[in-house]
Image (cartoon, rainbow, N blue to C red; front, side, top):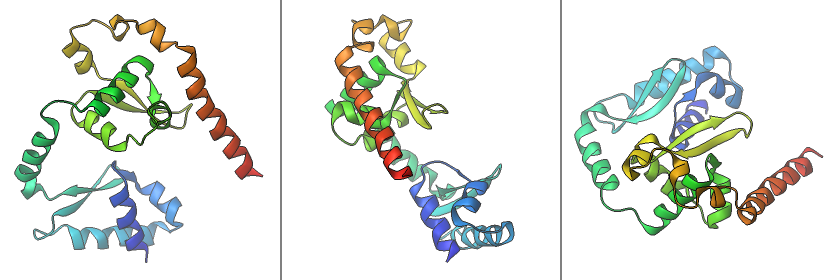
Length: 190
C-alpha cells in the first residue's frame, strides 16, 4: 500500500522529503500520492500520537508531536551536553583537517560506520552538512561555531593543517574509495 511506503520513507529520512521525490520513487500519480499523504497526516496528526507529519513547501517529514517539545528538548540537551567521546573527536578531527568530506570518505579513513557520530556532531552544532552536486552526496565541514570555540580565525590555523590536509597517504586511501565506487558503478551499468 502506498501509505505504508510513504511512512517507511519518511521514517528512514532524517530530512524533509520532496513530494516530487515520493512521486517518482513510488511511481504514483499526483492524485493518488496527495490522497495517501493526507491519509498519513490524518492518522498521525492527532494528540495521542507522538509522531506528526509536517508538509511545507512541497516537502513532507515526520516530526515529534509539538506538545511533547519539552520532553524531547530535555532528552536532546542531555544527549548533546558533556564531553565528546574519543570516536567523536576522531571524526571531528578528520572533518576539520580533510573537509569538505563525505560520510563514506570519513568511514574509509576511520574504518567504521560514522552515522550516529555525525548526527551527534551536527546536533551539537560542530559540523555543517551541505549537498555537493559534483559528488552527488552531502559533504561535511566544521562549523563556524567550532572554529570560534577553538579561538582560531580560520581552520587553516590548526596545527600542521597543510601537512594533514594534503597528506598523500590519506589522499590515496580516500581515492581508493572513489576508485572502488566508480568501478562498482561501471560494473552495475553493464
